Image 1: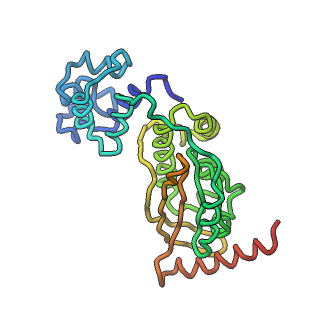
Image 2: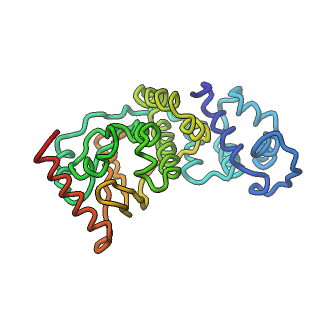
Image 3: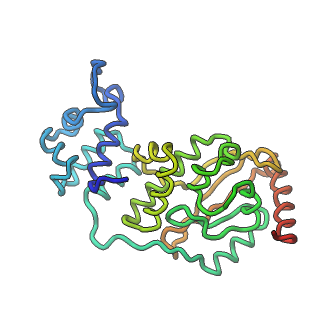
Length: 277
């Protein structure tokens, strides 16, 4: 899905996302591009148009820190997006590590000890590597609880489960972008990209936006077929001993309806353990 010029792809995608009004430029209303033109980015970054065009086309591979900072400002990049721009424009040799797919026994023990909260371990390609009984019960409506991207984009149940499916989809794609930036060339990420993009035009559209944002924490709303709606808080905790892995945990506000729903969810989890299919 990439051209082989990731730095140029990123510049084009972020340029398309900035309107002239946002950049403080006049908009004549007759534009052939959805966002800024190359010459406008060059003007805002105080570089020549020819130099910026060479950057986008991949003919200039060694921009300075000052140039990257100026482009980041011109494209209105936030801290995360600017960091990705620097990662692509000034790669550090030997900085790439390989993701780990095997979940340690200690982490599984910790996760299973969370009897009152859904918890699961996600890998670099958003594969579900391990899950406790509460998480299994929470996602029991899906045909398979195996990969968050496949579940969101390819399982029809997702539209019912996520009360804000559009946000869930965009967040998942942004998170995969961040993971692919950290693990360039990872075969599992590439396999997931190929599978989902071939089956979901929506995924391909969101992926083309090139928004890089790791999922760390947020409030989420689910609609479970057995326990009803849940408003929960999500935290993704990086597993420092296993690059690419995150422990995902959902918690409910004390005294909330979600806390009552978690009680029902735990009963479902216990019943499933007592009567495995």
